[in-house]
Length: 298
View 1: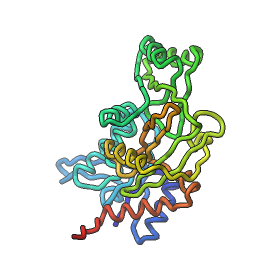
View 2 (view 1 turned 60 degrees about the vertical axis):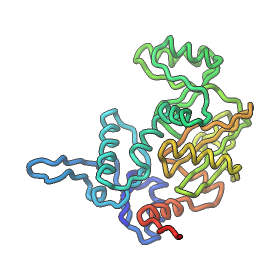
View 3 (view 1 turned 45 degrees about the vertical axis):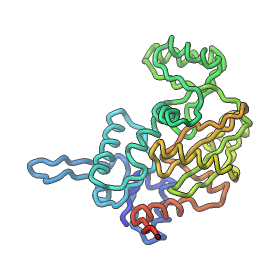
View 4 (view 1 turned 135 degrees about the horizontal axis):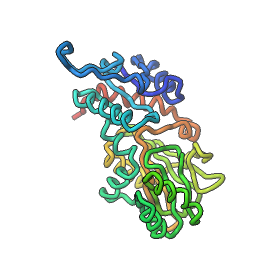
């Protein structure tokens, strides 16, 4: 099995995954995003080609991270993945899953359509609409970047002064504001990592404030969620068409269990620390099964 991993060779997750694949006798090549090239068929090229060769020849392409870039960069990268998928190449997660999960508005709307409980959310673009949204959320809201992960750029807006920079940004540049109700909670949430049919769980406890992300200082702890929580995570991941996904669940003080977001390129460093499980090995085994699925036993 030839695996091409889209990411940075020195990245912790990439290195772990490469080692796990090599340990199982699989070929793994890391390709940086900026190395991707497409050659469209013309008079001298009989068919569309993709470079470097590791991408063109891969049995499975694994997406590990999506670097910052302009709109054209992002569109080209997603288009190229879509072209690979259209010719039958296996991509984990699929381009459609990445599109759904990366866009917080789109993913939350899909989850709500599927009957999943999510926070009350308003996405607005002009100053008046942003102020009205904040007021309708009780003048206490959380603002997040539409694209982002690891808790970067998340702020609580509980005063008019804290809202003002976003009003000014919308006035100057028409910036989109993604606002959610602030959900009181007990200082922890749950990450359920789904790798195919397997589920791994941890609790993330905030030592400082309401944000629980491990990247922002949250403490990972082992946690065994009820089966209903795992079922909810699976249903949510299915709605976003992901087969490897990090599903974040928040038990609210008012009794609701909310799906906050789904990460289609999830990290697992904190989860390994909390559980002692080799997650990279589980991912490598899932890739192997995806390439050569076991025959059903009757």
